Image 1 (cartoon, rainbow, N blue to C red):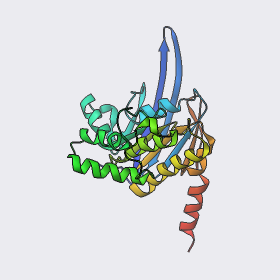
Image 2: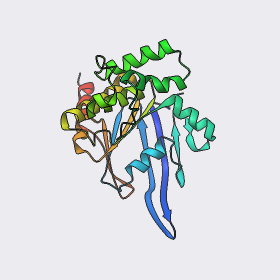
Image 3: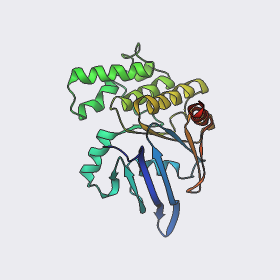
Image 4: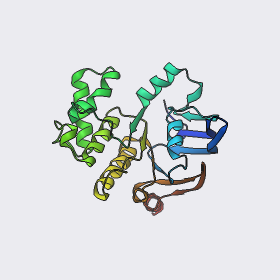
Length: 245
């Protein structure tokens, strides 16, 4: 299952509003974008700008009021609930602000957990989990439980858990909000490497301006609309080097 011409994810005319009684609050208004494989796209915006709602819609967790999302050639909201769940299981990974780790499980067990749902045998799952933990720099700390980890280590375990599924689409919601600058840099570098090396399309939403330098593309969102969509400096430099004879 692949996108067309390197396009992995496309959203067209997305609208979403939340209704409370007679009050209707628009969150996203006629928003369209196209995302390519092997790119880390950072969606920046203040609280209430609609960025987390956009991430939920792009990942198939929230149905828009209008518009469509085409991911890896599949129009998500034409799939049945079972088909959509299967699509997310096999093709997407998620990294959340709150880590979502189980207190009683080691780092290795945390990463192996979703691989059980993919039907992998224990040895294959263990090897893939170990490889993912090594990828994020935790190869020597696989037996630690969450209480024994720093915040940065917990987030890296969460990234390894998503990476172990070998997703084509990876979604990260405020992954550095609880981290200091050093750990935030490690996390964004890990996400960028997943995009480049593993050919994933990575979408990260945040209000953290520190992440701009690690992104290939930066989309600024405000009041449910795209204010700007630009290639980040690092990506621009890469493209310039590619053009140089």
